Length: 178
Image (cartoon, rainbow, N blue to C red; front, top):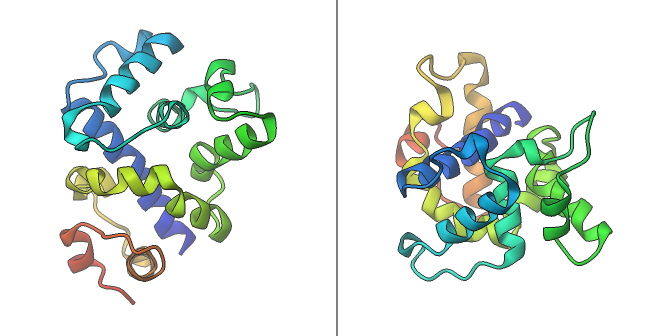
């Protein structure tokens, strides 16, 4: 199931990025400093597309980490100090939030998935991502590897039954809950 969730998690992040671009944000992003990311993500989360869903300044920094993972911690560097500070009131909370929004893509296990898919921010964003979660976003042009299809069916069941989160119709048709 870990392999199936690895693809699904990356598709979630890519779908958020596709939504960001579809709403007209992101032009020149490769040259943005933190303050520009903060301003653009704040505007993005204020877009009418989100139908008045309330987002906090902590959410803004979490979305920055999801959209621009380079601001997160790596083996060679610490997380960007402004993003890290923006994740919460104290260092212990910040470290947990960074692991949640950045580390899950490297450390995908039952515990991290539980925290990620039950997180209030992810719950708020998730339904807006579904239209952008296309086959190509998930699998590229090659499609899913046949040896992992059973894992995707388990992902379907886990998302629907355990997390109460929908999957795109094409996904549930291709990978019915096992």
